[in-house]
Image (cartoon, rainbow, N blue to C red):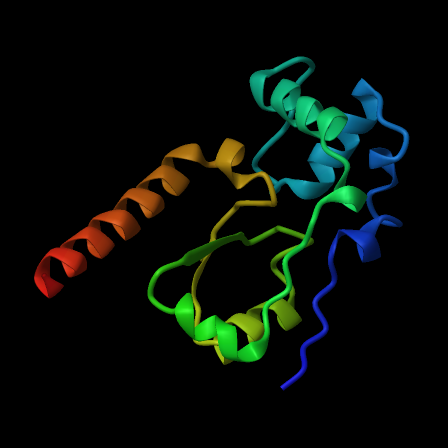
Length: 143
């Protein structure tokens, strides 16, 4: 089954602020990627971190590893995809269909956007801790 999943290359028209980065564009871009309950303010920590990432990584040059359909079985039960409810990149119908088709575990985080680790850090931390605790428990049971 083929799925069309849009990556960074296909989303440049939405996020043109990446190409002409300034503090003002970083704020605009962070607002586009964030959920409605997160407001970046001038020079707050998430904005400074986000701007640093944008300045020092170039999405077009990131190496994206492609997996064949039959390789996804190795991920099942070992990975949890956390997707923000308002994430314009990851929370798409094609992405969710792909994850479901591959029977990969995912959870959509309410009120989160693409930058949900800053927007709702406590929720994300609890999800990760819970997932790791469950995995550790299962590994102990298997031993």
